[in-house]
Image (cartoon, rainbow, N blue to C red; front, top):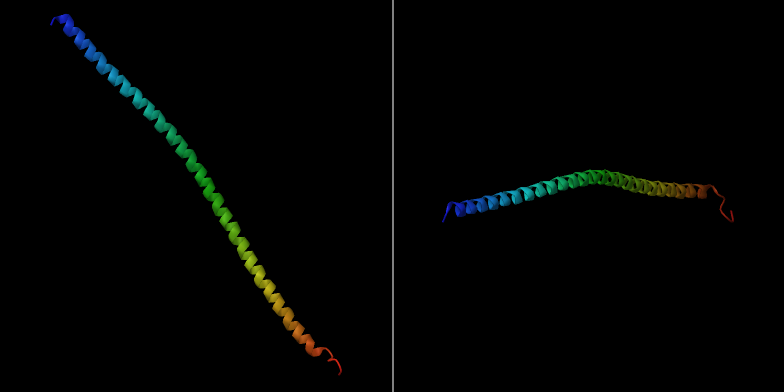
Length: 100
């Protein structure tokens, strides 16, 4: 094998190694770009989730206030009805009895 053949083999090996390194560098750049895009999407999703958590907490508070108001209203209505019954019983004693 002459110097020319050896030089050809060396050039082929060097080109193969450089091509392989270039391909790995390209893949690495693509992976970094994908990672950056994923980080941006994750950040946006985190912001959205935070907003949704605040909305959910507000909704829970509103629903709890509604239930408290309804329960309180039911208790007040029941108390008024009981008071009405007591007043009815009280006034029945003061009304003249039929036939008397």
